[in-house]
Length: 367
Ligand SMILES: NC(=O)c1ccc[n+]([C@@H]2O[C@H](COP(=O)([O-])OP(=O)(O)OC[C@H]3O[C@@H](n4cnc5c(N)ncnc54)[C@H](OP(=O)(O)O)[C@@H]3O)[C@@H](O)[C@H]2O)c1
Image 1 (cartoon, rainbow, N blue to C red):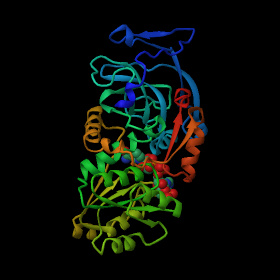
Image 2: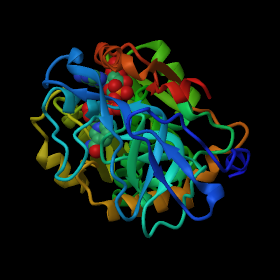
Image 3: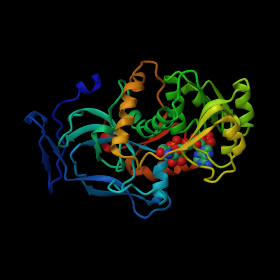
Image 4: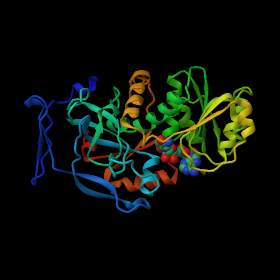
């Protein structure tokens, strides 16, 4: 990317007095001095937002196939809240720290890596550990920062774009001309679904809970919005001339499951990403059968690094270039210092945010 070429090739970070670690990569001009310890946010005891506490930890080990990223910004996602509450444990071998997406600068590359060299501006889907000043990430989960995007903006992308690409695009086969019903349309997943649909020539109907959230969903590309207080299925049928939608992205679950079936067209596919309003539902099975509807569900974090790398390739080849277009509408972001992660969680839980919440490290605040 053009933006990465403006960075100096040698980045010297202030070493801590106790035990600076020097890692060498290629020529002397690529040497980067790293501190021995970093600030990170950990979950002291699972529970309320104040469980998130700042601590000092050694830098993560960089395993073969991984790159070490000096984190500028880390996105906040629904799964971070679930992990903090003790409901979404990290998969075996993953960092116990929260944080599933970051942006920053590559400062070390492990054995066998080929693509992202020290100095590159990147964004990445992590396997955990993003709420920290450094994180090690399998190289296949790392993408370049789109041209013209700040680190804070770029950190808002990976978790939701990987999730929606895997479910709506790769599994449910979203295709040009289709119509997609997007629940939680002003949130992270919802916003990604609207934008990915528009890139792929599909059109989105967003479901939101306020006129301001509806306006935001339309600014991202939704051709129509429905308020949750309305009869969602009836409005969707009227917007689609009685046909229904081809695909549904659902983060709500509960009673919305039956609404989704009623709002779906024949051969529709409902993609279940979360169950914010309830994990059990009464589903009209006969209607599902008659319409030939598929319902699929998925969680991203436990997937293998190979699967995540395959999703990254799909994003890189089909979607990424669009984000560098001059008139691309970036997601709305609200930023917090990394040390205020608890405040960001409280804001997400209060449901009064629009778009994405992003944590900035001291390095990210200087950019
Ligand atoms: N399956 C996966 O791999 C995966 C990956 C990422 C995220 N997720 C999950 O997807 C969900 C959405 O994540 P996100 O990052 O997009 O969160 P978000 O930014 O908070 O968005 C959630 C949206 O859902 C709406 N909503 C409706 N009912 C809600 C309820 N009972 N509680 C909270 N919000 C409600 C909210 O808008 P209104 O207030 O306007 O209704 C909000 O815009 C989370 O549960 C997250 O854990 C799953």
